[in-house]
Image (cartoon, rainbow, N blue to C red; front, side, top):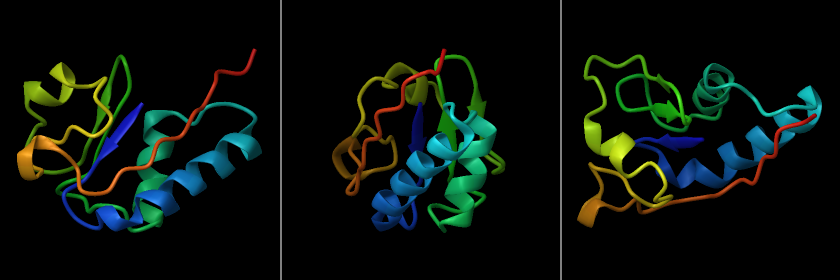
Length: 100
């Protein structure tokens, strides 16, 4: 799963901690919709710029549809098409494993 936003990126560690906490509480990996809500609650990104995606779906509520570069570079954790040099200034990675 990957979350990108063009504003409030400095909140990446806070949203990562909140996602880990939700995974522990739920005893499963949160869905992209749940992660979108967690990100909004932690003020990571805004409605217009927040994109959450996993291997199958994208969740966004802005007016612009995420371009193909989001999916093309999905595996590159630091990639963000709107970022300087195509990279995010702030990143945090969370290792979540599916529960049996």
